Amino acid sequence: MPRITLVRGDITQQSVDAVVNAANSSLLGGGGVDGAIHRRGGPEILEECRALRASRYGRGLPTGQAVATTAGRLPARWVIHTVGPVHSAGEDRSELLASCHREALRVADEVGARTVAFPAISTGVYRWPVEDAARIAVGTVQDTQTGVEEVRFVLFDEAAYAAFAAQLPEQGQGE
Ligand code: ADP
Image 1 (cartoon, rainbow, N blue to C red):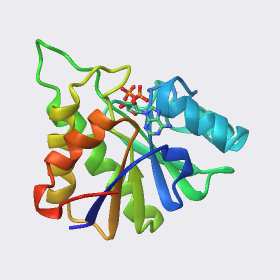
Image 2: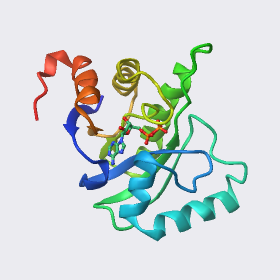
Image 3: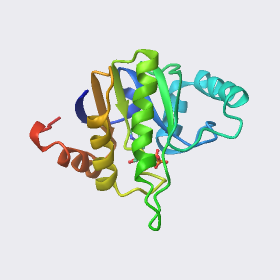
Image 4: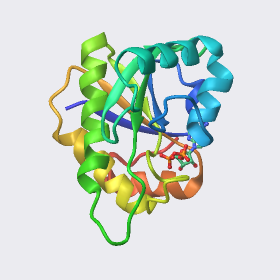
């Protein structure tokens, strides 16, 4: 099981082997984390995303799957793009959110990443309640067999940080 750490901050500023992008299925960028990663990382990431669309993901990257590209100018080696589910009141999509975390770690293993930063996937535009997203994210990472040594959740605001910290009471997480 990887060591889980929490920081409040901006995922584009993390010096890690891989940062996970809360992408949308087009792989062509968007708002939130996705916009920040492409803005800071520069055009090289988008070029690789376009190539992936042309070769493997003409219909888009399916929800719950993950794929790696270069990290361009970010202080990381790879960006692992994954598409979170939009939250639904009527349908339980938890397994798809868990899959994002499992698949991102599987891709991290494939590229040999040992330190991986995750945002709070699906908790922005996709409206997943952050307490529930934190439970799924932390629980899935704890249950996944991986060579990744550190999973760092990078939380943008205090509410998200508190939600993730509540899942790790034994660690007494501070900043
Ligand atoms: P999704 O479409 O999966 O909901 P978003 O990018 O809209 O993804 O939001 C996911 C979470 O990431 C939200 O909690 C948002 O506040 C947070 N966030 C936005 N920008 C950044 C950033 N630069 N670094 C880390 N977290 C961010």
